[in-house]
Length: 344
Image (cartoon, rainbow, N blue to C red; front, side, top):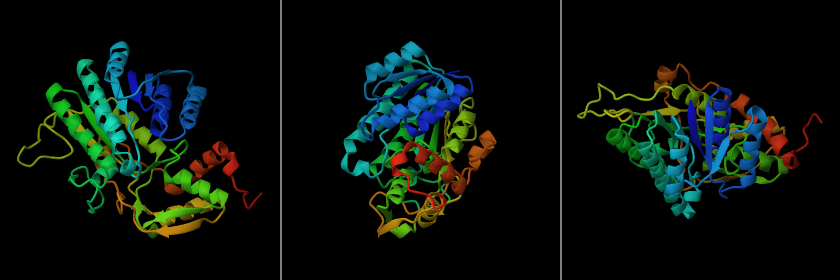
């Protein structure tokens, strides 16, 4: 199939492009290479993909540029769109809210409009576990309400789900939203805890552990995210014939629209996560314990039985194994941050 992947130079996007090319699909990538973090990491991800599977088309386009997005769709005529581009980060949204409106709302509208005018067989887009917000009932189910987001980032992700539903209903666009849970692994973003923690531990610098390390996260290894996406590509949602307006199912619809959680289903306390990092780096951390930050949720845990039913797959890579793979990549990519191992 011909597949357009937005955010193709991003963490999840680069891994997704690699998998799709290995599976024999024709891929067109899109990224704006912005400066939210060092663009060199994005260029290096693209180079990594090309070293593995050869060259692929990559357009440098900003989601907010409606004319450029529409022209790309008109030229390439993708059958499937995997929309992973977004302004990420909960804490960044506290100081730079307009970046989220430009990318996550205006940008997503441009994708939906292009899917409307250049019909696609399936639009898969990234949502986030952050939409569950103030909901403290775990595990989080796609059938739970998500009406109390705790950050603008989370609010834009919920808005994406609603926008996709309206376009699915009005124009028949098959839309699948994926709520990712704390994705980690090689080539991750430097604003996320794996790189921040690994760098601080390796360099003997103090690291900040919020909520005193007591809150939990449902860590999900990148390969499990990509496997889930790959299995959903040729499963565009159908209208749910049992959908009841009197008792509406929040995860499906009378339109061809559906939501899935993708999470490891094994939440781990942050202090346990840190201990595993110390183990793989063979070095103790210098920790500054701090209270919970604004916008952070206490605990996350995915209920992902719908994903398993639809695809026959559920995330399976344990945190200990996944962190081992991540640390091996970290030492290779950031050699100057590498601390001597006890065995050396």
